[in-house]
Structure formats: structure tokens, C-alpha cells
Image (tube, rainbow, N blue to C red; front, side, top):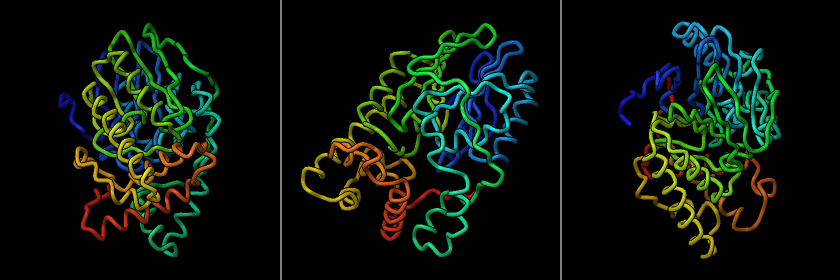
Length: 330
């Protein structure tokens, strides 16, 4: 959808509905949402660090006086770029799925701070971590956990607006949710939808992620705010589902041929999605689908750091072949 420019900041996308966008949508540059009716407010996700979240909240308060207090916060999943700013709205009721709450501590700010402090000694992995995360400030973050946890569906009101929160995980992560405002035909998809960039399959299975796309299409929103990328519509959801289908097909062929994960990743072209950024993420997705084809649980597959090591190796290989990566400098 070209109606809304993909520019940093707050965009009104409906009646009392807003998207806060962080181009370019790459590692850590995520979107958030805001629902306002009268003096009631609901925030959809916080951002990756405290300075970014503080700036976002200041922008919202300047534009929408009701946001001087955030009443409710929905975390669409547990990834850091959607939760590490929670402490700045800790007065809010923080709502999340059971899966999100269970993996809230899966990756700690101090772990990332330690890794970033070692990047110069970490070779290719260090270079890749610098590429992904050097623009962010991970100091002072205190994980602020959900206070309201639900299983499948949570209905709530923001003023007179009805809001449905649907648990569609595990997919991208263990506990992804969709936030739907039915009377305004708008949906906040979290990281169930990436637009213009390859996703990362941390948990899967892919079948659940495809079903999550089907759920969005079934709800029939006019406007879909993705977790990363520009404000979109149903066509982008269909294209994203097609990506998952093509990826799954290509990976299974190479799994059946006996290729190992890195060999398969280097062999997969995904020509229909050559315009998408962050191509190095294909390694993580291949690894996740291989794990699924082996019948392993996420806990039995590669650790997050093993995945990042593979991402770094593939990133380095892509550079050696002259494949461009988007510059992450803001």
C-alpha cells in the first residue's frame, strides 16, 4: 500500500489508530502500534532499546495527548526488539500469550552487551553482530514481564473500541499474536508479517506460520501493520505466505538430497523474492526447516548463538560473491 510513506515516526492509519515505523525494517528496526479512544490507550509493542522507546513515547505524547498514560501494552512476541522498552510503560497492564511469557527471558540484555563488547575479537561473527546491532544502546534495560497472560484469544476494550488478540504461535516465535481492531478493519501483525525483508524462523513450524497468514486473510483487514516494513494490506500477506511455501519446497528438496544446512542455504536462490533485503537470514530458515524435517523440537535444534554463527558465515559468503546487504547505519 502506497497510501502511507515508509518514514520514521508516527503515522495515523485509521480512526484513533497509529503505526510507529522504524525504517529500514532490518535487524532491530521494528514497528509498534497505538490504539486510542477517548482517554484510553493501548500500545502494541515497545522498541529494541530505551532511547528508541523514549523517543517513540515522546512523539506519541506530543501528537496524541491521551498517551501521557499508556493503559495497556500488548507484546506481540518475546523478541527483544518488541519488548526491551517495556520498563518505560511499566504502569500499563502488559498483555501477552502464554508462549511469549514463557520465553521472555530467553535472551538477556546483559548477554547481548557482553557479546557486543567482544565483537572485535570474534572474527566473522563479531563483524556480523556489529552489522546487526551496533546502532543500538542496550544499557539500563530491565526486562519487564507480562502481567496478563492468555492462551488462545483475549478480548479487550480501548474506550469503545473492541480489540481481539489472537495467539497464532508457535510460528516466528513460541507465542506470536495478532492484534485486530474489527470495526476499523485494521490489524497489527507483529512479526507474523515482514514486508520487504526475509523473516527469521526461530520456532516454527512453517505450517503454523502459513495458518497465521490465513488467519489474517480470514479476518479481512484493509490495513495490516507488519512487525518490520511499511504499512501494508492483504496482498503483502499473500506474498509472504507464498515465500514460506516456496522456501519450504526448496529446503525439503535439498534435505531429501542429503545436503547439510549451509550447503542447502548457498544452493537456494528464491528468485521470486530477490528484491527482499536481509538475505543472510535464509540460513536461519533453512536450519529451522531442517530441524522440523528431522522431527526435532526447537530446543533440540541449534542454539541461538549457533544460528547466529551460521548467519555470520552465510553473510560473509554472500559478501564474497558480491551480494549486497542493506547498510544498517542510522
